[in-house]
Length: 95
Image (cartoon, rainbow, N blue to C red; front, top):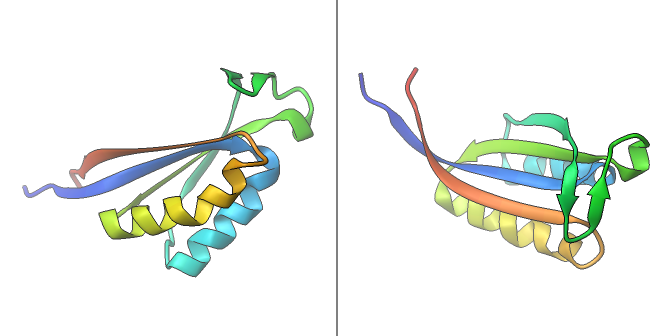
């Protein structure tokens, strides 16, 4: 069995950004992603998720390194005005 190596990009952001992030995926040719609601505390304070406008989402996508670089660059304008954290790691897909 040969594993395929990808970059896993995990985006933690305010829920109001979800549709904008998905639009970026479409423009970059990213077709698969996973979105989950999440709660926690960070530099923007506690996010309880009790109210949709104060909720956070975690959006994950696997892609190549060039696409992950372009995605990160496209997300940076939102970093000024919204809670946003972008994490990239190496993953292997086994199946």
